[in-house]
Image (cartoon, rainbow, N blue to C red; front, side, top):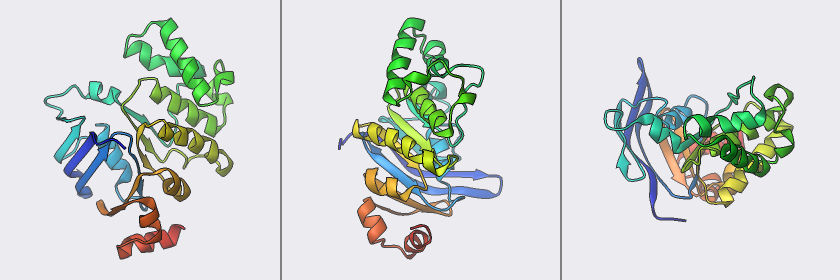
Length: 245
């Protein structure tokens, strides 16, 4: 575990109209941390991730990324986003591009990598996620689990400093969940900083350095997974875990 702080969140608030979705969120994520956000649907987990990737802009509070306070007035948010990889519930692959073209796209257009270099790096990433044999296939020919692994490779192609996963397995058939979680475990073992919104409690328990239980837009409890799952301090955490475990 490193001591260098990757993301620091102080008193983050976000509303959509009258709906106050995030309420005074405080969170510190250090380099190589794997953090799992758990909680019922609608508790604000995905909105928190989207604020950390600046896909949603906060109403108030401070987000510090790698030691710099990021504000839309002072930062090019697209540049910041390049360092924050994001994998969504639905894969958002380009249907008219092959697997390898999907992975090469951003490095070529955003990072201005040469086609040869982008292809070389994309092949290495497809190897990493176990899909080099599918490089010339179109997404429509892939299973959900394979699409999600391509989406992970595509996010990694930008060489991000942190990866955010928003329920990456919830749209998958149960038998395909394992292959995606295996890829994520390998990333965690390599020291990638990760924040994962997940309903996969087994994964959270096994891979997370710490877990965060959110309810109604607030962080209710934070702890080491062993501690949080086996011995939650808050009654609300206990009620939630009783309902899902």
